[in-house]
Amino acid sequence: MKQSSSSSSSRPSSAVLPYQTPRLRDHYNLGRKLGQGQFGTTYHCVEKATGIEYACKSIPKRKLLCREDYDDVWREIQIMHHLSENPNVVRIKGTYEDSVFVHLVMELCAGGELFDRIVQKGHYSERKAAQLMKTIVGVVEACHSLGVMHRDLKPENFLFDSADEDAKLKATDFGLSVFYKPGHYLSDVVGSPYYVAPEVLHKYYGPEIDVWSAGVILYILLSGVPPFWAETDNGIFKQILKGKIDFESDPWPQISDSAKDLVRKMLDRNPRQRITAHQVLCHPWIVDDTVAPDEPLGSAVLCRLKQFSAMNKLKKMALRVIAERLSEEEIGGLRQLFKMIDTDNSGTITFEELKQGLRRVGSELMESEIKALMSAADTDNSGTIEYDRKKLKRSIRERFPNASDAEIDVLLPPKVEITVTKYPNRVLVYGLEGDCPMFYDIDGRGSEILPTVYALWKVPDLLPAFMLKGGEVSRFVLGGADLMFPGIQICAEGLPSFSAGEPWAVKVPGNPAPIAVGITTMSSTEALKAGLRGKALRISHYYRDTLWDSAENCYVPNAATLMCKADSPENN
Image 1 (cartoon, rainbow, N blue to C red):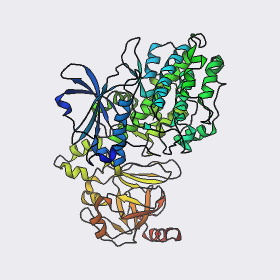
Image 2: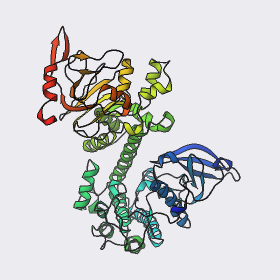
Image 3: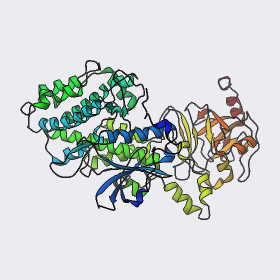
Image 4: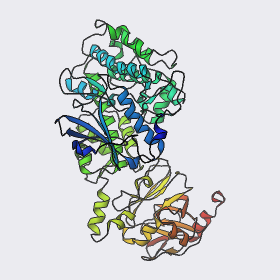
């Protein structure tokens, strides 16, 4: 059940806020960027009248695609106002809206993230963990007492308000939070994989999920690693549903029984038996300072905590770099780290480069963990992490200085068209620097392909490199790829004429290895009219070393074999 504001129905369809606001820049000066989220960017800002520093979260309205998205932003604002009296919740100062953005001006938290502060201090104990958990669960209790379910508790959402020794820890980011009524249950799956409660995965849950997430944070605070771990999100979910928690490995034999008792009660898989936020705050390990030992937990816990935090940040930033086409300024320090790791200066990072680079910066991640990071960041299944997303556009501009922005944009499909889901078999044909997919197979099974056919036919100089991945891990990035029909090579200019149902192939001159074959789903005239969205080609087979004949020292497709393969019963 998705909760929404009662006032949303009365809002104008083009507005998020149910009231008009002055212009943000009449009252604030925006400064440097502080962070980037899925929907918005947070900037440092200064109030003109007072000189007081704040944080401003600016949400582009173009990213709000439906009424539900509008409701989500408005609900986040309402919830932050609702919790504004709590000293451990970031206070919202004001909201502003114009034709392009919704702005949330909030209290500035300049003290950094929870895990970063712990690592910086260099010493850490159960007693300190108990103090932090008291604050975190105190926020949960405050939310629940006001009918709010947070739904995305994780260490990254807790910041210190300053760098001072006595800085307050404050909860941020209520973007997934909802109002709820006792006895009402929700079904949408939300949250971050490590911290998701099992009942969320069962799509039937209430506020107890926040206690579970806090319990996961406590487990990490005490051991430096999450209680449920796997190399993929689905693997993590399976571990959560299985529910086996490790209390035998180091450092758990040295952790107090009282701490382990609290973790077990917070991570009870039965939400009805799970301890409540109020009961957590009444637990002896939280209440009695003498129960939680003040001896340092040991360097191993701090080291693991540092590695876990660093991996999450690198993983998140790598994904964002690939998904969002960030500028150099936006990539910031990550670019320097990646350049150091990228030993051949290719603009991409291979698994071996990532492994060696992380070793050089002192990481002790296991190979399975590095593979998990690589898998998450390698969204195109190329075996590399692309960290310089704008290199392709710069290269095109350098090679074709007279090309207009519109002509270049034809070769760079919108973001929504270049998001690739991972499947074992897929043909990707890449642009000039191996960066922008020109072709991609939507479902990975060869049943449908969206080609930028028109762009390739009209701009033959930019015929892309070719990559094929089959069931085995193989990679071919070669010179110019030609789209082929049996016995007919596409001309350098003009559009070849074909009908629906004709076999076709992708050919790389001079090399027989990579090839894909299929049949056309529409005529060339229909394909031209459909433009970049034309589903003109359907892949039926992927091949590496077959379907080629040698003629005058040049490999060409075997037309008869192509016809046979395209007409085989499994394709009908």
